[in-house]
Image (cartoon, rainbow, N blue to C red; front, side, top):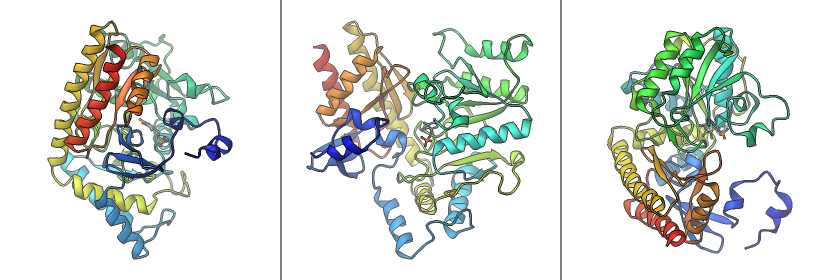
Length: 420
Ligand SMILES: *Cc1c(COP(=O)(O)O)cnc(C)c1O
């Protein structure tokens, strides 16, 4: 495979291609093929962007039809038929049945843009600047969002101090049996805690990049209550955990809470097209016209596939039931694999929610050996966590039982080969 152009021309900033230094060409569902035809099963799926698989045929058809009839591709923030269809479908199939009454802001097309917009709006509304964020949180790498992202790898690259946010311990950060919200609550109410009164709290309910840490339902409910009592806006960053990944369309549905704002992106278009949105409680829409703009606010092709994905997968609860069922299959296997590792002196733990699952194997080196071994056997799977110590599964939600079994078997073989 000819990789000279990548090596000569592509910046050193590249990441995923270092773990998988081969040239991919085609993809379908949960499979990827290289230029020379080697097949891989995809348990990375665009880091949670391809919940409905690569080149999903239903979405592809909607996209092709739209292009074929010269539907508007780029229209700034014009009202287009494509956008109307998206809003209508979102309201009817997602928001109304869940009792949610949100307005939508379409910022630039990637996740971090939605986070920036949420943070900025929270500051405008409250007149406060501080944002509460949580250890191991990942919210994007533009300036405002980066201040709420924990990982030093990203923060160190900012070049100026990351300001405007203060970190609080996420659920589980201080070990089992400690409710980290005891500290959060105390710090908020103690005038000498050093915590500036926040405009908002931003949180992932299952941390993706931070290591597949799933906050407990009680913790989520209590956080929502703490924010509500103190007039702090709650922003749920559902960019990775949303669109069904945890077994419900929104990750917060499990806890029955209604966040003040929700950011969504990655799998929102359903087809891997860039698309981000901020949902806000209706009364929070304090923007004045044009105050936050961007050339690619709402990319119509992404809205066309997004609307089709909602129609096809979210008209009833069949899909989410199936995600929950497959999530259990993954959980059981991961628990078994964590047990295998623990038995031979590598304490490991399974965690996650729905089909957002990981095995914390305790060290980044071991996790790398496992994912590298899996790659050699035909499985694309990555790590996350502060030291890359969590082997994470983000396979397409549409993966078939057979494909899932094949992928899990490869992972198991890779682990067994290291310990037996
Ligand atoms: C990926 C991600 C982002 C950033 O999205 P980009 O499209 O990379 O800007 C923000 N928050 C979470 C939870 C993410 O997983």
